[in-house]
Image (cartoon, rainbow, N blue to C red; front, side, top):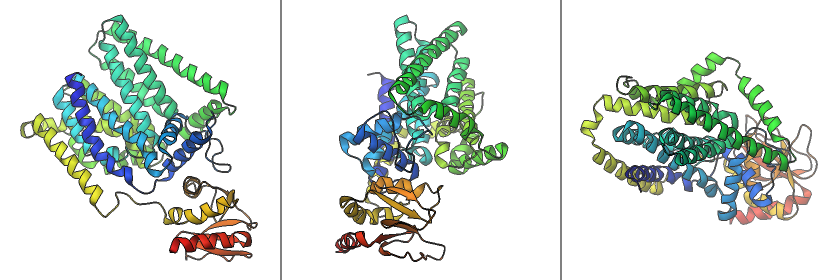
Length: 472
């Protein structure tokens, strides 16, 4: 094993230690619940067509399906749970650092790579998302691997080695595209930007870019054709229509959305951004413009959506950290914290972090609404007795949280009502005053601070007995 790879694996392990305490948390959030539900459906049923439920995303046109397929394979091996839903991205996120460290070490030296990894280790919006089922973690892992092998192809002299690296890079990029589709456009632009910044002779750069593009297009086209030929649902026409003409144009105020998104990155990553301001092109022209280009491409492209979701900032953060590493070196951090000392400090800090969060009596993040955990027992009892779906009252069509969580935790789909419920099981959301309207023919079975579970006569005894057993 090369010395570079050993050092990259060291940082991968250290950052894995920092990220892994979240593996054992109770509760997942909205998007992870949607993807995990689709993955569980794939694990149980297989097939080329993936959806969440009968009423909630019976088909899923927002993103390609690679991540639910990968997560579904994990579920087949380890079972579907909150914990196993986090496993793929905990691995992918940690190994993102492996590929980025190799790339930075090879091009800019060990000092920059070391301080980049150190800055990344304490980047909570980045490392803190590894153990979550967000698509950003997966697709950026694939992109980082693609970038690393693309760079190796630029420097390869043997023809056989060159084509091997081109094929590997194209395969990783294809995987990234099949994870989050056109969200990878800034990554595509960054690969070409890196080729332009490369110190490799220009004909070699053009050959690499041309060869890589041809192989990548061929791979993506073959995979699209394979899915289209085997899937009855016309995913790609719906996806491109939605991605290019709906989601990308939904921001009502582009400049305001961009400004707010950049401000969000600063708020989440303030110390790193302030240190990054000390970076100068004179330190290393290629590194500075590559890092700045990567940040702007990923930040501005996500800002176009006009949404202030924290996980959208994820792919921009490593490029901030590259500038942060430059800023630390500019301020003389390497004179006080040598490579050996910084690695020792990082390893000991990671061990301490791991021990603390496994013993601390407080959660790392806010848990989901207690009802999704508390109502599982009566839901399971009624499902075993023949219940196939729920009814939702006072829940809006845009309230994704409830149907996503009910599918994941209860394995029951919900029909959102606009009229009084028919006999069955109804989940009602409390009003502003904490009151729920009376439902003729129904009785309250289980109560929570946000939702209440009401059942008609047929389900009353089953629901009541299950909740009584739970109290004992």
